[in-house]
Length: 65
Image (tube, rainbow, N blue to C red; front, side, top):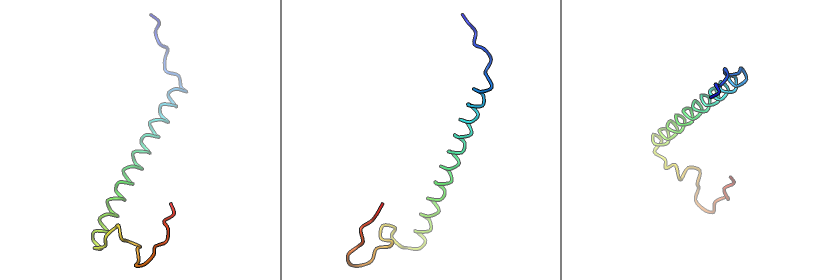
């Protein structure tokens, strides 16, 4: 059976880049989760229904996006 050669430098760099990308993505996810929790907490503190924020009586403008 043939043995595999040593890991090349390019492959090592590629693997490190993947790890860094995974780490950055996990950090972004954690930050987003924290922001969502903080925003939900603020809405509960204000006593306003989050589904009704920005709605006024009468006909509504169409939502874009």
